Length: 170
Image (cartoon, rainbow, N blue to C red; front, top):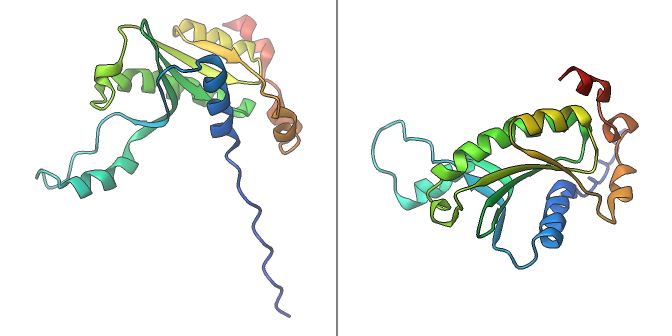
């Protein structure tokens, strides 16, 4: 007996909404880019110059950062994570993005001399906070009004720091 396929649950981009809401509240009216491609295009295997259409196709191979905020005195690079299990990943990603941003031709003329990195999360994690500070980054804890709706959709272990006691070892 053939069973009808279940309709797919519509995917909601919680993390993109989270970062966009934060940037709108924290930096109203400030120039910014959300979900921004950074770095350079991959070099073509042939070594030949690429056509504009080919260059556009290769943009999907570039890295992307959740948000870049262009303040007069500093540029803020924001990597948002809603799950505790993703916070250490955010630390490595942010380190790479802060390094790549000045090498991104599209944004080079918009950058301030100082580039600040922020990990945005609703979960306070003392271990990740300590590691972030060592790298010169900030762990920003912010909870939007709709956070409870999102938290209801994930497991308990994804809502809390993984090992907060480890912060004493760092």
